[in-house]
Length: 490
Image (cartoon, rainbow, N blue to C red; front, side):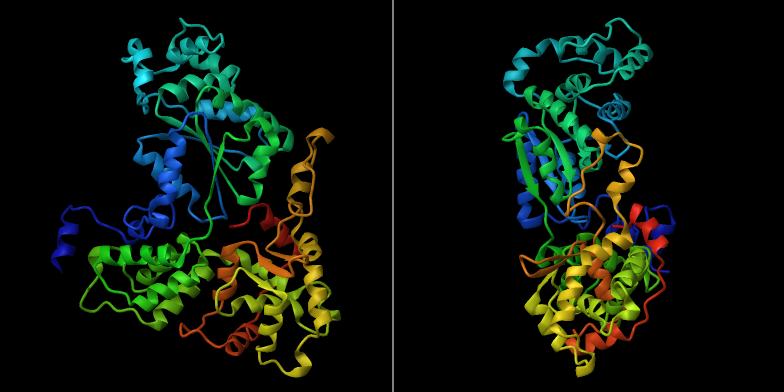
């Protein structure tokens, strides 16, 4: 037994590979400050500016939560966090936030010199529900100042509202964080946005985290908020930043990985740090290594087969939920009546190199022509165009409409209004005016590229089409897909 192994068994803390390459939670060893720390610096500056709504948006799994948690941790702030859902009213939101307050965790917020001069008498404040009840009087809320802790908490929770949070957010190190604001019904979004103005008017800054295409919901909710919102667009990561994750992790474990493998993993991770973490972890797990102390540095080696197998394993194990969606898409509508596999070919085009999230019509035609298919199997231009135009209706019919589910049982005024861009769950979108086909979920692109094992040597497009078209697609029923749409793994 090596000295490292022996020390870990004798009571020293064991360092797991899963704690180095984190596939969930906050990374430490492999945390990378994107673009030389620009995002962290700008978000920190905005949070410290009085009365700012810090809107952090970006595609799923691009590190929005990791970013704000790192910034809050650096400044010793504690997130007072709420996930919004379609079942919640504005009152429910405030109640759940108040219920999460733990006064035993908080400390006094550091004040500017001006604030210190005006708050000298409150330097030794003991935070608690009784304190909040008394402080609420200062913001015009009558909750009784002589109640016990239990009585004060009961009174406060009996009529929740944003005013009750003002003392907490002004005096303690709590920072309010809203996630999934767009899931609320439109009427509740508008009401909540109106109430947010009470925070900005009291110089309280807070965070709103969501997807890019829903950012406009906040501005639409209250035009008075325009000018008080600082927008941080967290897009897909650069290959160089993703490579840094691989580099940091392997250096910490003290083993080598070739530079071309680092680049390959980063390029195939479709701009997502979580995919890089998952692939690196898989490289060790496939060798039976779960702890740093188990690594035999004299024998450890990674080759092409390891890289390919790890990428394929991550696609199959982590993103298997896409299989049914994938099967429905490649079959397309009226499969038996069609002469050509136009839908299957459209998706196969995304497997070509370089990795792309969108393809123009010209690029699609070029890739299909380079597929090596026999002339009688190549779909004519009209067939491809027809398939592109039918994609939206096909997905709506098969995947269902989230807004229909949310509207069930609601009075007319509270129903969500459907629009062409938000009425149903989609993975592909054909924008005719742009003459471009988009993959909307980066992880679906990763799944398309790696659901089948493929060479690391980047096969020619014809070889990729051979791999893609010879692979059987599993059976998928409409009912299975509809159930999964309500809670997809995205």
